[in-house]
Length: 209
Image 1 (cartoon, helix red, strand yellow):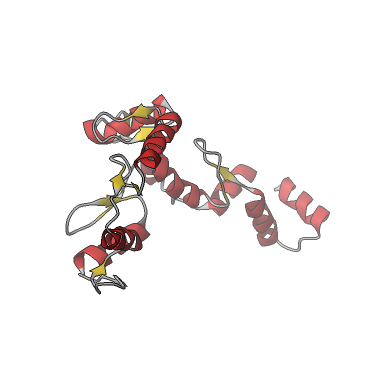
Image 2 (cartoon, rainbow, N blue to C red; image 1 turned 60 degrees about the horizontal axis):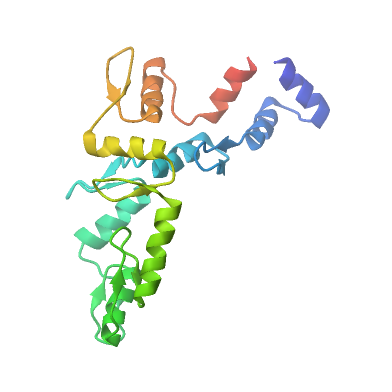
């Protein structure tokens, strides 16, 4: 409370809402893996799904999982509605994505395609594919033996393996429910305490008082 009054005096703020707005702008949430900054906790939580490999948004039709809600919507629209928004200028065939259109048009040219077995990226020259493999191995030396996905750190690969093994090492002390990732356990524990996820303003008030 004294801190709020101090800020109001120093910055000519007229009410507590202005102080809270000022504090929210100052708070930055940092990703512990890549260091990227976010203005809100919920944006950081959404970003961290990229590193953990968790895919909480699942298609109700085919069961495929996605780490972003927008990707799930795109998948549903393109795969299950039958819409093909991009057309080949040479034969008129409809395709779902711009990347698939590019591959299709390259086949019209008759040029051989060299495809990376890890990320499906294509190259017109085999030496480019070889150089690409060397880059992947250098940047992500820790490769998953199940799906081939690469990681720069052994710790990240260990976390990724849980997707294949089903291991859930983080257990809630109150109800016994288990989770693959620490972040999932933290979010779950908030349901026991009655806190809402991503409420920055409440977190600030707790810190101040």
